[in-house]
Structures are given as C-alpha cells and as structure tokens.
Length: 102
Image (cartoon, rainbow, N blue to C red; front, side):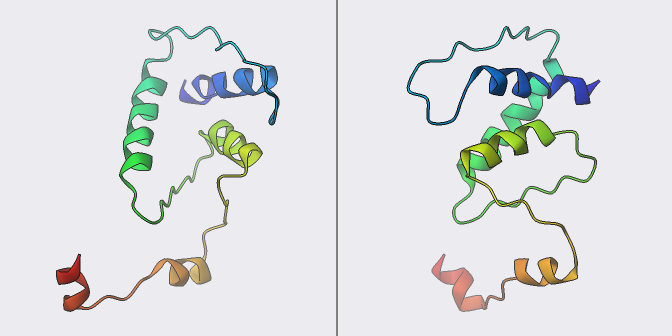
C-alpha cells in the first residue's frame, strides 16, 4: 500500500532534527519493499530538477503527506488549498512574442 510506503519519510524525520549539524544515518530502505515509492521519488526528482520558475504539485488523496511535512519542516514549500482564487493565481497570460523569446 503506497500510503504505508511514504511513511519511511517519517522514520527519517524522527531521526533528524532541522538545523542539526550531526550526520544522520539513512533509514533502512528495502528497494523491493518500496518499489512504488522509488518510482514516485524518481518522477518527483525529475519534476523538481526540470522546473525553471515554479513547481506546482497537486495532491488530492494525501498519500504523500509525509513528503510535504518534511518539506514544510525545511521551509521549502508553501502548501495551499486548491480553489477558484488559487486557480486564477496560477494562470499566467502570455503572447506569441513571449513564446518566441523563450
């Protein structure tokens, strides 16, 4: 079950404190057991490293909450509720000239 697989992030967070200078050993990670999670993390890595300005990650079932909680702890994400005003904020107008410049 994918929900339980993401919990390995919480195991890591329990061993690590933000701002600590001491190294933290990685949690015991069995690739066979966490096969789906490995696939999800690879896709996430590609999305993060390819984003140029902003990266929007939409989550509706809460399965990856451990990852968002970890990012919140590091203060690297803003978590927003999706609604009409948020959808309008995400929209960016562009012209043909804008596309040509890129």
